[in-house]
Length: 131
Image (tube, rainbow, N blue to C red; front, side):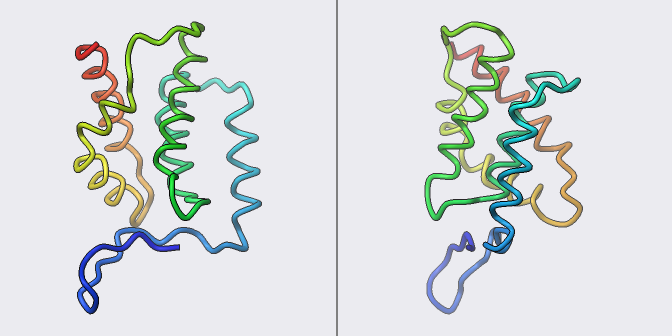
């Protein structure tokens, strides 16, 4: 699975998902981690869960939407409330070009997620301000 843009003959590969034969194992690892209690701050876990899921990229379409839902679930777990007065998903949509650029940069090379985590937290802050 590749995320590609550009016209035929001038395609640009933005991301190549892990091979399909690794999908079951990677999803099992992700779900085990996501559903376990950890010492990690729950808001940071939301940011990392979003990144990890979208990096596994298990579906042909809808991975970003599901990753945003996973992050929202973790944020709900973090604040212990079923009520939501803000939409992180709407804020990401408003900042989607920066979101895509940062994902592409963070998914290459060493998988250093520092810039991603910083952006996610700042985006969450902007979400609260917008609400």
